[in-house]
Image 1 (cartoon, helix red, strand yellow):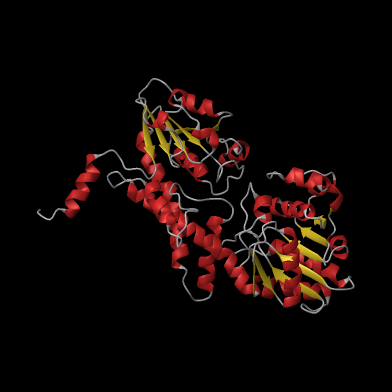
Image 2 (image 1 turned 90 degrees about the vertical axis):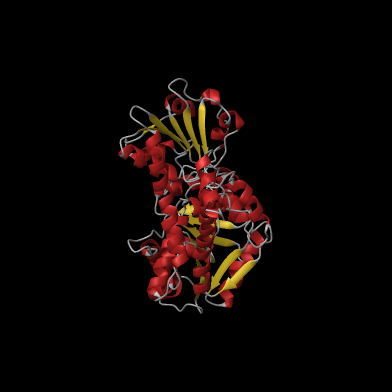
Length: 457
């Protein structure tokens, strides 16, 4: 039974996995090229910001050691989990440059080791990457044979930033691509001992696992986009309410309620790029991934359409406040965030924009490069705003009251994409409330439907 594991890459996922493994009694050696990250882990501190990570590392300090040396990790463990960046390239594929370098180091170390060692890739890649891209590097650098002297697996995790450790320990299932039964048995045994909820392990070939990983995200984003499409339609139907519609849809067990909200475009470091990658893969295989390509195209069109809707509301001398700059609530990550796109685009069109996020102010300010005024508090934004855009479901925003909004100069427009604000704001005579996915209060939309179905024109 394996007791010693190594984790290659101490970023958000790698460091969180190291802490989770150690919390379940495994001895963990972490490897990173960043000296500061290594030092922090050895001091019992978190090298990156992530929920509960500091607690898991400090409480299990005696079982966690970090190093810059891949050889030290390989020689003192039986299995290595590789969690390094696989950034998207200009074609939409996932680059193997960082994984390739890590596998060179691992291969050299395996060449010096007596006995079997298992290498498990966790980073997202496309089908064929493990077998035809990375496995040959291990064989070349080690002078040994895959399947005989060392194992090769692909086992990505399904986690969300901000809840990585909880998601890792309580997965819906674990995904395991294996070169052979021997290496797969080792990984499944570790998962069986580490996961707290007895999640099933889905074992398959390397290529099937690689395809499954990106397919999960592609399917989820298609579901999000479908709900967003319904929200758009509900705005043009008398009495339309997307929450009423999706609540009924989600009750069907074939569909389910998760990710069926209907709000604003999805973002973050994974969702957008996985659809693009699936489209790239299909083209390389002489096939089509029309659904994924359309999902990506539609998702990117949503913020653009919002900008055009907001411009007429933001006339000369008016200020727009963008509340929510991260890609999801309570996160500092701003990659592909709708709020960032809206703030940047509105500012570029000549609108004065102020913005605020509970956690992402610093990263947003860096991304926006001084073109938008990022303020230190929610109230500072509200004091200046003639138009308020609520782009994330942060709890702080849900507590906004009508009295918090700017007074004088006419009603404040509040565009609530998640329908998170209460009746105090919705019903205030000093507020023009617009809820995404809620019907406009207009006779025009009723007249249009009446004309559509009028049997006696």
